[in-house]
Image 1 (spheres, chains in turn brown, yellow):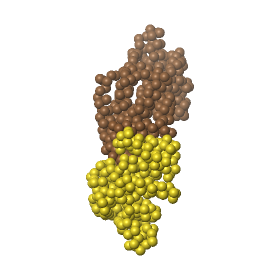
Image 2 (tube, chains in turn cyan, orange):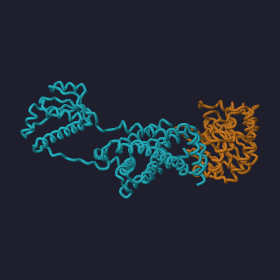
Image 3 (cartoon, one colour):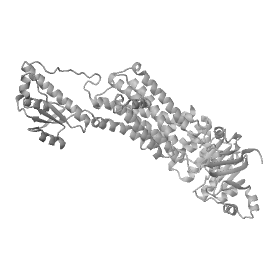
Image 4 (cartoon, helix red, strand yellow):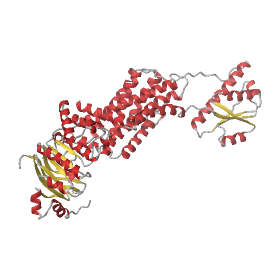
Length: 367
Length: 246
């Protein structure tokens, strides 16, 4: 215990005297939380629509006005023929084309509505498909209004959608907890690796290796400071989420911190293990970078695990961030409790123990 | 020779097919200043690292402070001090913080730490330096500090790997005074050096060539045997046979 306490004193002194690390711990979360939620939005806005109006009726003008009024859509141009509209689509000036047939209004009044054509640019698949969905919604709403005014039977049954937990379907609410995880992955994974390989490169670890200090004690002294670092990073990020995006956890803050402690232990264990197996900074950073990319892309941080192929879903079971993401999103957005999430906590606990034991085993005092 | 503290038989270390240390055999007695000479690349550091439990021997056997070199590396570490060729205390800690760190690791009590620290500062004549970051100290101070930290826990044996490389003759002289005091107090000193005047100060000297020990005796006996004026000449005669380059 005495050895651990002197080693911890050493680590904290070095941390506080470092010119680089304390800045990273404070500036990194601030920059990520202030900038990234605005740019990683998958909400589709400003879909440009070109209307080919063959009808030129009150109804068609009303359609154009309603489409333009939608917050997601804007009418770029109204053309007389399809070829001109297609030219705009090819030039990239419009995202979708709506063709209103020449007998549109009369067919509506006769109660046998003619089909309308939507052509969308599918290069950006998300914008293409969501854009045409929004367009269909705007048309259906206009038609329903007109039918109601004229006392005609409704041709489309309007559906009502309510989104639970993230009522406005703000993509940002989905991203902010994920960004906190990304911060912990980067800071609590890379910094311990940098620290330990640094000791190898300056040769200070050699003087430690020739003392009777235990491998477990030494590794623990490398891991524990990152608990504190992780808590600072997470707290800054949560305060910013609350202050800037008005997003506070629906569930217990204690649950978030508890999961973060387990997760930080896992990530810093991984960093220390890799550093123990690397001879140079470049080697350690390259391996860490590779693993972190896999963690970020595969563990459901950006894209839902449910949409991955079955074999990939099985791989995600071995990625610790997967469980932490589940916990964070559930607590932040749904207000889930420990009882709902105990299996995710258990998985994180197992990862923390296993990764830290690997870190101890990878530390060789003798070559 | 009185009680043996290091005893090595056919100790060998191979890196692939390269025999860095090739079957060395020798004994060192308590309180000796044992000079371990050899050209660059002769295998001195590798041999010393095996004795300190930093490197695992490929074959051979040996004991250091009564413990087996192969199996009891961690127990050896309680009884030895080591000062590496490259300065390896923490540059971003102060002199006092480095001393307290190693005192804590070696399990010195609070009172022992205070006493040893006071002794050390008196002996090294460190005053204002005690709260200075180690990285800012001149090389000569760093080396004296590294030696003091290596002997902080009063080890039975202290291993010094080229302790005086790159410092002025006056500082080297002061450093050897420290070595003499330590040896007089009963600690065995195992030292490598490239300075042949330092070799003259040792109780016994071994000369390594190409991973093997070619000569081992007191400086006087070696000079007599090779009909040489100085250890410098003895070293040149032996090192000339080396087949390995730098």
